[in-house]
Image (tube, rainbow, N blue to C red; front, side):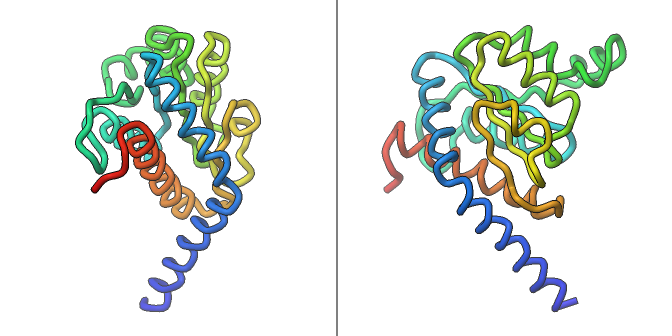
Length: 192
């Protein structure tokens, strides 16, 4: 077991190292896009399935409440939290429409839509990103593996270059935290 623990840690760290090496500039571009949206009175809309749904909620909470510094709330919403909307859309239309209908209802030009999918091929995330682009939202894809369809269609693409889902998800959490930290520090100054 101890060897598996060490190997697991090495694999997770390697995924983050590879991601950071390939995506540093894109992370900065995403931070700038989030700040621009927030300063213009727009919001960050985040969504994904399963563990990515939990990530969406976690990230929205960090922006609305606070991350590392006390500062005013920042406008962010996770489309994964309203079970009545999700189940009614899933029942009346399709599970593939649970995010796209919310994008139509809640999104406006200037908002930033962040779709999270470990494979980059989640149909409901892809449909929502397509709709967001049609409405005039900027779009961010947070993916893994080869990025799937999602990575190619978003304005900004952050892809974890491994196919091992746990390491993709661990890296997603890291990048979500670094995005929150950098937005906070760029907008409100570094924590003391």
